[in-house]
Image (cartoon, rainbow, N blue to C red):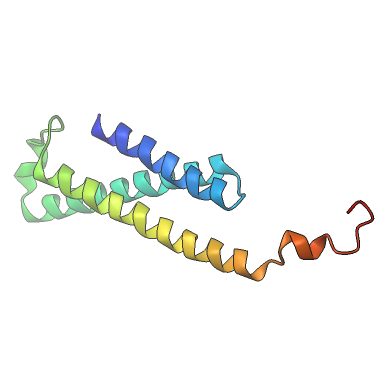
Length: 113
């Protein structure tokens, strides 16, 4: 249930970034969802392989319900990945925005002014 709230927050966070810089909101919202779910999958598979190699009997007795320290760690890692990519995109958009000529420069010479 907490993952759903994290996904909604990540989607909105990226959509606001895209809106601020004039990009398509839902593209970046889906990117946030993909980053979060991809990080969760990679962490889950790597932890499962680790558990399977170190203690094969523990794999049969996995509890998939409730909060566990591993799920909390995976949420933190996934949120950090989403935030890190957000900061990279923000830097990229700011750099693109600086390189673009302003609208006033583009309107020079228009007869409608």
